Length: 375
Image (cartoon, rainbow, N blue to C red):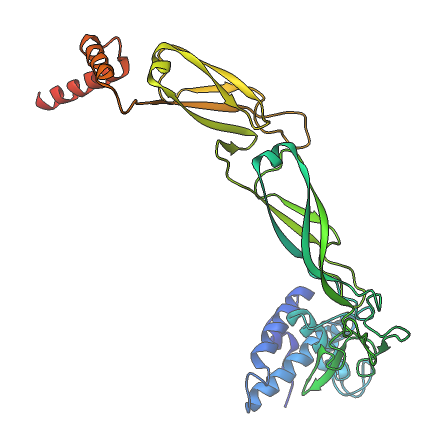
C-alpha cells in the first residue's frame, strides 16, 4: 500500500510554516488519538500516519529531502537509517507536544523548597487615623520557619536525602502506549528530597504555626480599600523556601459627621429658620480636631453649600489638602408655644411673594400650566 503525501495527511499546503504544521498536527493527533477511538483500527492507522508526517515535516533537513525525493528519501536506510521517518523520535515528539499542550512539563525542584502562601489581613481604621496617619500593631496567625531545624524539616544533625524514585527531579515519566507522560513523583510529592528522620518540632514540614506581632505604617491621606503589601511577612516557605507576602486591606469606618469623596469632606449642618432668615454664624468641627466658623448670609436656603479651603483630607505623597464642604439644612421648628404660633401666623398673613420668591415662582408656573391645559 503506497503512502499518502505527508502534506495531504496533515491537511496543509506545501508552503505551510512551522506554526501551521504544529497547529494541524495537534488537531489531527487529538482527533485520531487511540484513547478517543478505542477499538478503531482505522483511527489508530491514521494516528500513526499523522505522527510520521509531522515528525518528517517539522525537521528542516527531513522536510527538504522529502520535498525533493518524496517517500524515497527514507527508504532503504536513507536519511539516517531505516524504520521510517521519526521512528526513534516519536516519544520525544509527543512529549514536547503534550508538555506544551497540557502543561505537563516541570522543572527540577530545588531541594523541595517551596514559596509560602500569601496572606490577607483586614484592618479597620478611623477617618482621623486616615487623616493623620499612624503606626498600627497587628497580630497575625501564620506559619513561621521552624527554629529547631531552621526550616529543613530534618531532625538536627541530619539532612534530607535525594529521592531515589525521581533522582531529585520531583517528577517521574511513565510510558503509556505511544506516549511518555510525566507526573509528580509519588515518593517525594514533587520535592525531589525525602526526610527519613523528620524534625520533632515541626513534623518534617520545616515550619510551624504561631502568632506574630507586626507594625503597619498607615500613611496620611490613605483611602478606603487601599492594599498595603508587606513583602516576606506571609506564610513561611516549605523546608526553607522563601516566605510569601502579607497584604493589608484597609477599610475606613463610617464617620458620624463627615462623608469623604477623595480628598474632600462633606458635612451636613442643620440651622434654625431664624438663622437662615436673618443670617448668623456657627462653628463647625474639622477632622483635624479644630473648629472653623461659617457665616450664614440673610435668606439662606436649604442645600446651600459653604466651602472651607484646605480643611479636607491630605493628598498622599504631597503637601496638598482637599476642601471641606458644609451643606446647610433649614430646620422647621416644632413644639411651638401659642405665642410663637401667633407670631408665625401674623408673619404669614403679612408676607408676600417678595418674602418667598422661590415658592411664589413655582406656584406661578403651576397656574400657567393649568391655564394652558384649559385653553
